Image (cartoon, rainbow, N blue to C red):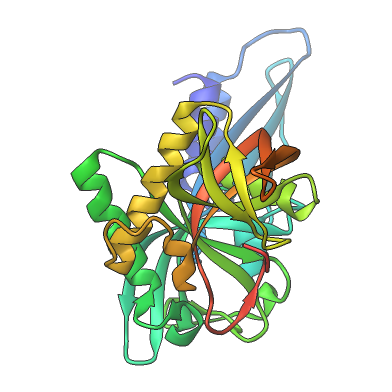
Length: 336
């Protein structure tokens, strides 16, 4: 056994208990170099132990570092000086409230949480959501009336999206887009985070895009760099165009998309919205007032068709999504 191996043994078995034993001193003396010239050697052994934080809602890790240093000086084989030290340090403990868990150290003001499971109780819905910013999965409790409209709730959206994916090979996801304001007032109880439903801001939407695309689209919309147009499945008079209306001015318009792929994507969203509502072949599910099919894009009016319909070109296309119109609650983006 060399000195480094010996020191590692000290650190792992409890240096405080072992360092004063005479048996260890004899072993150290036996292994020291024998010389008539004074020598000085210093060796440092660092042991790092990584433990999992106890907060099950925020599965993060912290590290405990133990450093053992021994300095040995020998003079003519007669004098031995040992100076062992031990230092332990622990990083910041796991976050204690929902805002810290969801948003971490970021400065973003809202976050699209992917809904992975929904359980509906008598009065409350229990959502299992995944936060891609902090890579955390957790459960949220919210009154059913805040995530439903008529007989459609967030559970119906998730079931419909999953069934549509299975039947069509698509990858639609349901997002609970949660604003940062007042989230720190949520309380944890029985493994659930109970949201202060009347004080939080959120939207519920379906998209086949990743959370970053959803965030980017909504960020541009919130900043005024994009608008919302509501398409129908009725073909417009121009290539890659659909009828629809502007969600701000409420004008009937012609929407000219950049390519046929975008048009096909939009019509697929309309078909999915119809399947959620149970209204097949309905060209305009947004008219039901429960689900809106929204295209978020920057647009530019380029003309008027038949002296009646403004023609809007899509300059920058962000996403199309299906938005559940909240019967109660505070929408994060009120014009979706």
